[in-house]
Image 1 (cartoon, rainbow, N blue to C red):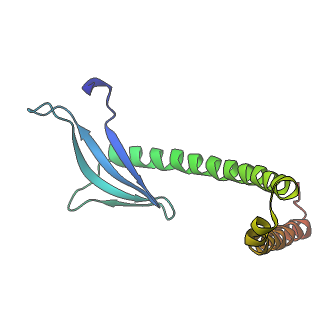
Image 2: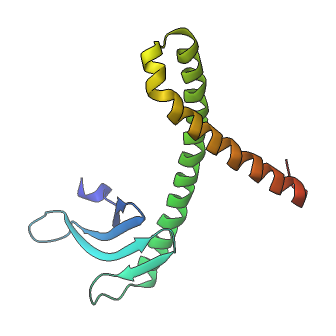
Image 3: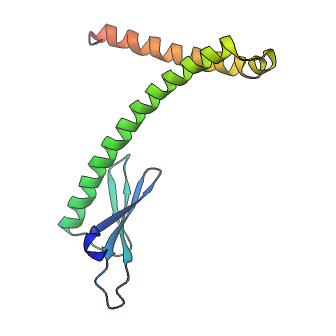
Length: 136
């Protein structure tokens, strides 16, 4: 298995990751993870861990991972929105065909407020795009 391991491991966290160098070439033949940096995806910051100095290879790997991670997160965001549209459609069908009065009483206000907020944001954003002339 040791030959198949990558040189770096990224432990994902909310805003980025902890970066580890993978070491499997030690005397005990154990896999060791040596933390070398902390990464913040939002601001692009790469902080070396402790007194460590990162090599150009380290930085290149981290930057490559950051670019790939941003792409993954962007794809997930749009997929989540498509799922939300599906959920709204399913919710409308549920409300029309199966929901009891008591169930509707539990969710109606929250749904109406959330949908009003969403509609307000979408209408404002569309208006902004129309004013700029880039509505596609």
